Length: 294
Ligand code: SAM
Image 1: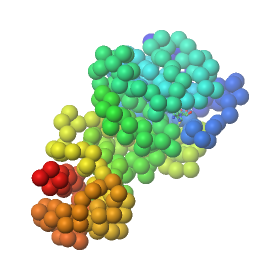
Image 2 (image 1 turned 30 degrees about the vertical axis):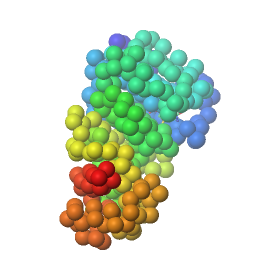
Image 3 (image 1 turned 90 degrees about the vertical axis):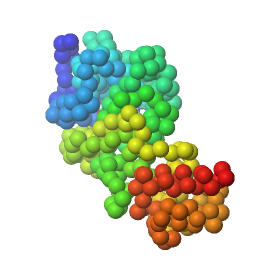
Image 4 (image 1 turned 60 degrees about the vertical axis):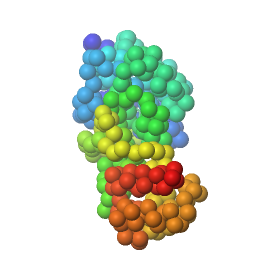
């Protein structure tokens, strides 16, 4: 396909479009548009987008990344909440026949149905420069709703990328790290400074690729229970694991059951939740669910 419209990755082309439409940035939607062609190329390459791929883009903005995706993919479906951007997108993406724009809140879109209708239920690639105010609900929604995704390659706040990739022993380690690593293999592709965006965000950014595991890395009898345990452990990070679990209103175990489970896992009574890795949380969840079902 030809480069049918000026590439918006070039700052002067983005400025021209913004001026033409008198576009006013909406802070509440996390609008920071990319203006660096190298970063855009890097995102598409890291996502491994090719001519067979159906790509879901979250938040196309004025269509900058969308142009690059449309050039590389079979088909792109981009979901944008801000209706002021829709006429701009019709302009900047005119000529790309493989792009569909949906004017909707991504958290309200049934992505399982979309994947079924547009890609025969086969795994899709999700690629986005995410609105940072809803990074976690978007990513967790994709995993927890079992949307058939092959990989999720996204620009996020640097600190959030670090949290997704880290393990026990780091201050960044928490419920998000464990949830992401349960479903996927995270890999930070690049750190991206504020001057690659317009307007410049106040924080550093990073591109992270989450490649979905073909088989889950741990065997858990009750996923919901494991994630309740994980949340309870990190909600009260300074407390011992036993106290964190006892104080959680999402868990219904007695003090004795919790202490017995920790002991039968072979851990000291004062162990903290933040010391456990994913395998150990799975072991604890399985031990507690056996106690419950006895
Ligand atoms: N993809 C463009 C780029 O890289 O230049 C824009 C990225 S900007 C960081 C985030 C985009 O997500 C904005 O266009 C914003 O309007 C959109 N957005 C914010 N909240 C959204 C939501 N709940 N659903 C869909 N799009 C959303």
